Image (cartoon, rainbow, N blue to C red; front, top):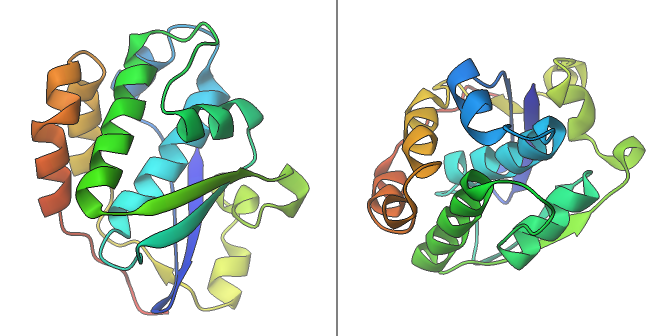
Length: 171
């Protein structure tokens, strides 16, 4: 699964989920499952928290290849075009939002969201962080089309993403 923790001036949010089979088939044609999960966690995090993030923010990723690809905006490590379409969508969305993000690799044993990605929500519950209540199913539908359509990824998908609304529970 994937998981994230997002700390902003409004508090801390978190979520955990499983990737639908249709997305795994689209994005994991090579042996890039963990790589895709790491990218997806970043994408879900900043999209569902888009109204909470400031212009400058940092995303931590414990997969070196994923951190490198999202920083560069493209992948050259043998992954198919679906990943590059996803990364193109990411940077088109970042530009639309006027953000200046910085992505940083972090060792797994220092990554607070690592247990969240495995379904261990104890730190989040104990810390009274706000859980995502409206799941990312709308986002999954967009990513399904993004995998096959670069024009959509950098155009209509970005507009649609900017209009999505997400709910968080009380901390």
